[in-house]
Each structure stands twice: as structure tokens, then as C-alpha cells.
Image: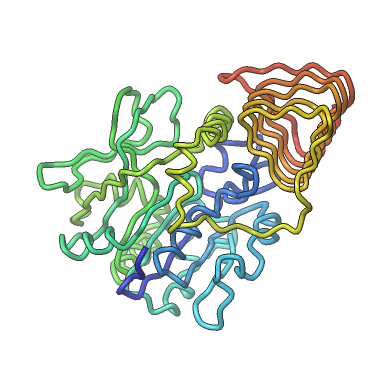
Length: 374
């Protein structure tokens, strides 16, 4: 990716849609949910900004952000530990003293940071869509079309009974958005907003200050769905792979998709790497009876049993005689001997004793809470 030619600020909402995945956001933000063996969801928007040449990024927190702070640190792993610009964690509290209620409320609270950045444009992103994107062509289109707001979207299959947090976009013949539907009860291929947008800082300031004076908090409802707002809202189609994380089922499915080489190659590209916090762990140790098939095994694991079609994070231990299939096992889990496990999601530092049998399914994966002991 080439560097942007404009002064751009990236803003990431680390906690948007936390309620969609309560099993994993009980003790952390959406952005700090582990993914793919060694990453966190926030690694993807952060890497997209950095790979696009955007070197000033603010992360808007909300609640349970201790693990997020630990993961991000100074931003060094993303080359964002800088004297000018760099990475900034922004407070979760609204101007009234409570935790913010929506995007507009959150932006009003951190506006002094945005003002200080002197950015010409602002790009907003959530953490619950996993994809790789270059923001440079989006910025070019935004300028060429004289758009007030450009929403980044992708075409994909949608089911209103399952995808509860998806916003659907409709366009006129000139690619101007004329309707915005939040979780409509429809099915089929739709234009799905990826919760990313580009807007000038001056217009965003006007919107945020106006919203504050009128006690408005939702950017989607008050701006995007308001046909009388008077803004020219355009769409930019992102044609690369994307995965929306909006339930335990979709989280499990997204991790399983990474076992496909074509999917991995589409997401993790040589020229656009996904950066994450570096761990100093030893290589994987395989026992004499270990049997691994089509799985992602992170560093620091000790495997003495069978692992098939699964994703194991750093430091997982699998005992002799144990068979794990179609599962996502997070960091530090210890699984005893002679266990039979299928379609399981474990949070960090779970311990499963010997001889346990735990069989879920793709549509109903079993979940074990952080530090659980079974």
C-alpha cells in the first residue's frame, strides 16, 4: 500500500457491539477478543491504518479495557510509538460523566484530541469486521466525488434472523446512498456496511457539536438514516474478503475459515501484514504420539494428543490420548489426557481435567469462561 497524501486521523471504537458476544466481552472489549491463534480483533483496523500510511490513531475505549491496554502498550508493535501522532487510548466517559451511549456521544467526549490532531480527514472504524483494506483509493474517491461522507461496504450474504448488528445500504444510480437499514428482516446478497467511514474533520466537528446541543448520540440513526440531513453520502465497495464477528457462532466460523489456505492468503497478504503484540514463546513441542491435521498451532504449545481442524493459541497443552476437533482453544489452556472435544471455544487459562467428553456443533459451539475448571 502507498502512503496517504492527506493528513488523516484514524479512530477505532474498541467496544462497539460488545453485547453481541457477551461470552467473550465479559472481561474485555470487542477489540481485544483473541482471534486466529495469535491476534486480537483490533490488530486488523490498526494494521489497515498503518499499512495505509496513517500514523496517528486514537482508540476509543468503553469498559473492561485492561486487556486492551496490555495488548496495545505504547503501540510499538504497530510502529505507532511516536513523539508526534502515534497511538492514543482515549477515555470512555461522556461529557455528563457517565459512559458514552453512542458514536456521537463518544466523539463529543474526545473532541479535544481530534481538534489537536489538525487532521484534514477522519476515518472511523469498529473492531468487529475482520478484513484487509487500503484506505488510499477510498480517500481518492471521497475527494473526487465531493462526498460529505463515504461509507465502506461489501456485498455479501445476509440473514436478518442471524446478523443482528448489520447495517444494509441502498444506492441510487450515481452510487449515492438513499436508504440505510439496521438489521432488516430480509435474506440474500446485500450491501453490508463494514462500520468504516471517511469524513472531513470540519464536517465531523459540525455534526458532533450539533448532536451535543440536541442531545443526540447515534451517528447511524441521526445522520445516516436521516434523509433530511442534507449530506451527500456515498458508498465505496470493498471487494476483498471480510468476516463479521457478531455472535459466538460467527466467531467460531471465522476461526474455522482460517484453516482454508485460500482464506488465509486473502486476509494475510505479504505486502499488507497484520501486526500484533510479539510474544516471546518457545516453538511448538510435539510429543511422540501427537497427530495434527489441518490446524493452526501457535508458539509455546505442547501437543501430545490429536488436533484436527482447530485453532490453538499460545501456550496450550494437550494431553496424551486427547482428541480435539473443530475447536478454538485460547491461550494458556491445559487439556488433560483421554479427552474427546469437538466444536468447543475456551477462553484463556481454562483447565479441562482427564477423561472429559465435550461435543458441541457448528451451530451451537460449547463455550468455557476464562479461568474455567472443568
